Length: 408
Ligand SMILES: C[S@@+](CC[C@H](N)C(=O)[O-])C[C@H]1O[C@@H](n2cnc3c(N)ncnc32)[C@H](O)[C@@H]1O
Image (cartoon, rainbow, N blue to C red; front, top):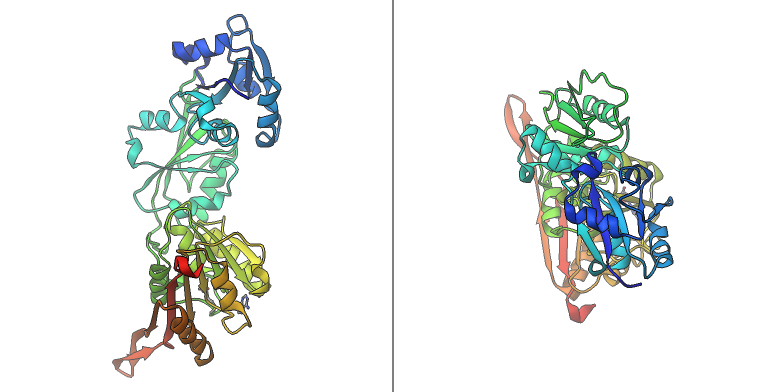
């Protein structure tokens, strides 16, 4: 396949809203590919190219469809800015960015910020298109302005219900429909009072986040309060968890294996560090594995993958991690070695334990591979009669190490 493919962004204002260079690309195209709704926006006489509707599912069909029209001038229609949650990404990943000539149009979020007077650079966007609603929870902070890309007519009602149920009922929701088009409309109410079961399918939600006074406050850094988690006692407690995440040091795009996931807190906080961070929790108890998934949903990281299996057997076939945390199962034969072997050069291993038996394994690992061996002892002030005294939690031994290139 060769020849540039024009990718033309078009808005709800259709042909009238297109600049001349976008129109020229569409007029001269021999093949016009798009959704039926987008193709219908083009004037028949001015754009004589053959019209083809995207098949569903779209992605696997892209290479074949483009190859079938090799040698002809192709124009692909996109909604708004093709490079923003759009077909531009799919095309760049399938045929290569250098084959594309992208003609941007203002995106729905540019329109939304224009209507609201919000600065785009300070406005976080969460897409719920083909993503679980639970993803919204990680972006909710008091006073924040959020734009949410809705999936369909029921998205605003579902968002309002989630906000009510999770302590954000006072949040103001504005739904901006058909932005830039003749049918543009604004709906405005709080989540607590949201009256619209359905809206236009083409919309952006704008949220002014307001937390209920009695709802739990969750910050952005690791060490969330223990009460943020549903747990059965198998939970890395707050201060040890914060130290563990500091040792794991998540960076954007990285993958963690959280072995002996328990309640899932390490994987959850790894994923909350950046929206591109990924984690796989491996947990042998099915009951706890289900709990990990619930915690991941509640804390806004529904993409956390849970593998119900015993390590090390359950590790076979998992994608290569950037870091491994061992919070359970250290004494399972071959576990530590399997984790070490799975890591690439530069990968990090962090393991915590409270037992002497496992501590001996960590001391041995430290002797062989180096790194840092530390002990974390957290005490909490509690009432003692009419006075106050320290209650000490079991000390946690932590080994953390980075695998060198000579060890890989
Ligand atoms: C102390 S908890 C980990 C706590 C966890 N980091 C958290 O914050 O929720 C240890 C967990 O490891 C699990 N476990 C123990 N041996 C295992 C193995 N070989 N494979 C997978 N999970 C294991 C246990 O079921 C338990 O849930």
